[in-house]
Length: 517
Image (tube, rainbow, N blue to C red; front, side, top):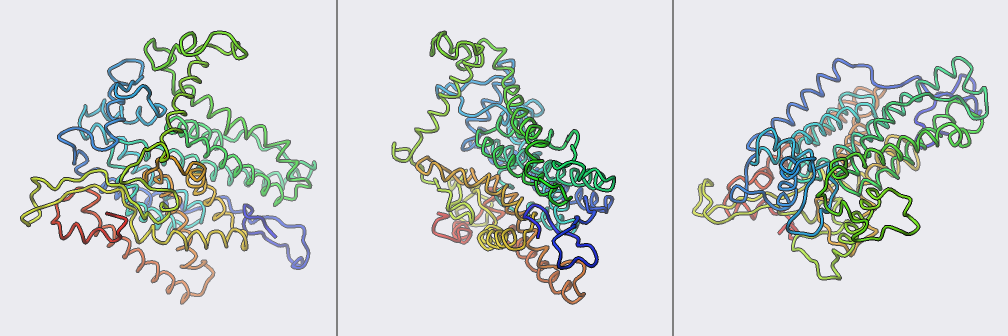
């Protein structure tokens, strides 16, 4: 029997009732490279065609909308203050690390302080996210068609669509997290290819721990992206924990699959140290590097906290003052977040809690204007931007998660196990602070993992290549009908995703649930 991270196992002839020896099939990635890239680039172009038009609309009187008002000015300060540092005159702290604002600043450098400048980098991130999801699902399933399904679903997802058209941080968090996930999936395939080669040469069982696996550049790349994820929002710390556990699980399963006598001990001896280097030390170094401007500055927030906020002596006095100052500054930020609670009186009309996020039961209204709006053909018009998950996708969250859990626990399907790790990393940690003020945009990193899970389920509906033609045709027809529903649903909610002028009656028809109002 295989583990959830092992995948299908090839039994040798005549050994159907014997537990050994077993070896995985020699399958280390999809082979239709040319067609795979053609499909990927088409879906990427489709994403760009939906994300970029009218990117500078709407604005709040030519100023940013909603929380753009925090990050857009701070990004501009990075360009104008020198050394890529920001301040926040309205608050005593800058409450998020600098990476997301650096991305926004790139757009502002290209296009200036306007809607295109604020949102260009977010739109690029949203397009790249579609590319990554298409490629990752193609690799997970060894099917370009299922990868294309995932890409189309993400193109039609309202959450990532809206997030790609606003100068906020969440889309950057999502694309960096998914990029790190994709690197670890590619690393899994590469490791198994190396183990297969070692097995063919008789080296996989030469010692009880198995062979060394060499330099793993995909995993190194994941570490860099994880550092940038933490440099965007601190919730990336939980992603590091989940993804480190996942990649070690891949290593244990791979060593077991190739006959290593002590796979757990082998992973501890051969893989644990390099893994912690790649997914912990590298992210820490990258995170600190994102503060290079702050370290070099004389005016960064709390840059010289040592000697002012904290003393110069004490147990930690051997730590350089710059690092102690950054720690003090970070502690102030953490205190700010911890005290932003409902019990302390901080409430917002569009606040939501994590249990509402899987189905998007409480969306987020970013912008609305019902005064002096025309262009809808009625006496009065409304235009709004609402962060809303496409119901045809998000309302299937619990059946999809249930199927994924069953496939993981009963069928030992490593694909679902890996995707559940990604989904859980973006979702479960928020249950640790339920009193904190929360919003649906915290769920943006959930969207790509929900889409990938749904695409793999749809691949199961279509059926394996070995299924009968009738089975495949029936499954493909059902999936095509469902995808048509998703596209139609996305078109239906388009007006409230893009601030298209509509009549008040149409506005009410767009709000399907009482919790959407």
